[in-house]
Length: 197
Image (cartoon, rainbow, N blue to C red; front, top):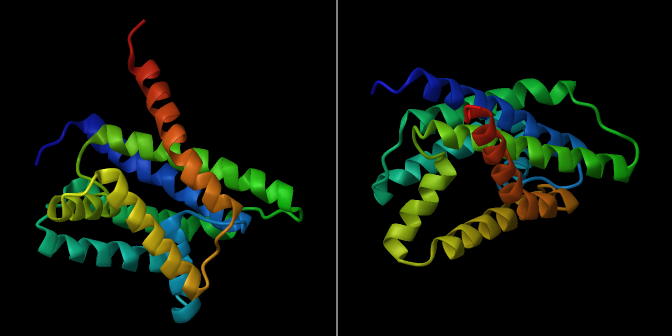
């Protein structure tokens, strides 16, 4: 494994940006991304910190790769570690506003930051994130459309997280509708920046 230096740089920078985006959603308190709903639910029953809960969930998802015969890359492992560490470090320093509207704007900002970080991570191309690998592994054994597999996976973790006490709300809707466009915008920006004049 001797990836290009640029790929390794993108691999590190992507999750470092992705983590604060997730943290903004948590701080806003108006609903978080599906897997963070799950992580928040886990924190309610374990008293773990959000960062540690996120790491344990990522590690558990990676364990599910074994029977699905998925192979992690360098990026897969770093994704799980870096996002959890950044989330843990950044959360105490983020502001929370008094009004719902201001926190909704904060959540929206979180979606775009997360999307941009995800775009940078994808450019590295050094292994799927834990959840993406779970998705492709389940698709391979069920032979169902990838969109259906991903949707059912997200709905399942939302339902479990919400039942455990995770925050489901406007931010969750923002994430569901906005993460794809945010990543696409991020990819376009990065492509534009890398195109020689």
